[in-house]
Image (cartoon, rainbow over all chains, first blue to last red; front, side, top):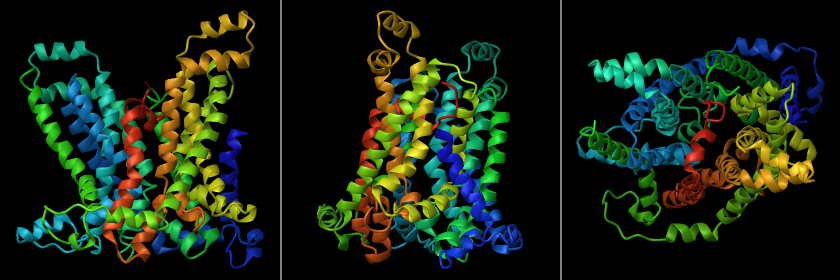
Amino acid sequence: MLAAVTIGPALYLVITSLTPLTPVNPDTAFDFSDPAGNYTAILATDEFWRSVWVQIELSVVTVATQLAAGLGLALLLDRPSRFLEVLRTGFLVPMVLPPIVVAIIWKILYTPDISPLHHVLAWLGLPVHSLITNPDTAIWAIAAADTWEWFPFTMLMLLAALQMVPKEPQEAAVIDGASALQLFWHVRLPYIRPTLVVAVLFRLIDSIKAFPLIYVLTDGGPGGATQVTNYYAFEQTFSFSYWGYGSAVATLMVAGVFLLSVVVNRLGGETIDE
Amino acid sequence: MSRRLPFSEGAGVLILAAVLSPALWLLQMSFRHNADIMSTRMIFTPTLENYTALWTGQFPGSFVNSLLASGLSTAVSLLLGVPAAYVLARWRFRGERHVALWILATRMAPPIAFTIPFFLAFSWAGLMDTVVGLAIIYVTFNLALVIWSMRGFFAAVPRSLEEAAWIDGCGVWSAFLRIALPLAAPGLAATGILCFILSWNDFFYALILTRTRAMTAPVAIVNFMQYAGWEWGKIAAAGVLVMLPVLAFTFFVRNYLVSGLMAGGVKE
């Protein structure tokens, strides 16, 4: 019964992806004359491939920055202290905020008229044009906002992992005169590696779903520069009403995510609960 | 070691201040007069005019819709999910691994994949643009979370207490209601709050599956951006109102939230 809630829509999605369905013409819902039509069309569309490339760019960059920021902060805050515990709660804020509020916050930061950032830069004599209307910088502007929103996730996961590293080997290493870097590299890193892998894959998969930031900041533009695959599917389906085509793109996405999930399951075998 | 503690704490405070400053900027903007918003002066006379302007518009309606959809989906998810979680925690099943995989799948699947079939089904069933329809969607992803986390909480309740109750003539159902459920109550509250936050934060489903009647607060904010000629003060005020419940709840369940948000990630 429970699984039906998930499997039903999935089946429906795949079936729709085999038809040229568009709401303008309801008869198309059962037109299976060319079941692979959408898929061959997708694979021949440059726009689709570009969206995949934009997706890869965005995902790789944001996961890397989130990991770096998260790990740095986790190492900084990993000390038994009541005060640091309170601080950690503060770091939760970006990731629990409604994503739409995060998007508004960054829209304000990226709008030159009202942005404190742009005001300061102008005051320093370095006026910068809007980053989100420039095709060369828009994707990085989104990446910065996404990093802000999600670095707490990697930070918290890594903090949890660091706290489970047994004390004895660390103390032994310190007594043997290991430097802070050696201590991290040879003693703590091996313990937190499985968590690190899971955190990366979780963020990687979630980055495929990024939507409100792109919707509010750039709407996929300028000129498609920030149109990730998710956004491409959304536009094809809900803006242009190519339901069958959009379903096929979404099906491909699910397949991609499923593959990544299998990897999560394999690599994180020891850390994933059951 | 003690020599380094002040460094961690000092650096931590500075970084946290930097991280939170964009959100605080939104907060101060919501108290500015519209004429003041473009000004670079940090000193300004605070005003509530943005909030009162929201009160008289359509925003309160969308806020209520958000509350209803999130509340309804949380209630239904708990009603269905808590007994299921109890059963999974107490009795062995062959399909146990599948439950874990199913939960992982709903956590991973891109929302667009659910939206297309739901959109078609809702159009057919007349659930488009209704709070009930939205709540149904939220139940699909909250249910997985409830089962996952409540199973953990029930597993932590000692089995012997219920066995004693059964011996004293309690049925399975009443042992669940009288023993296990009260003992897992803190977990239940935290799980409920997490469900509420996740539904409350949703933007994507609400954007696509509602129009005007069931529009939620996050979608209403975006409409300010498109149709109201960029009334930044109002947008900021609406943003503050939408994030307040989440921040308040986060404060109450902060410790649990960490594990809940990472459901499936790390073993507790």
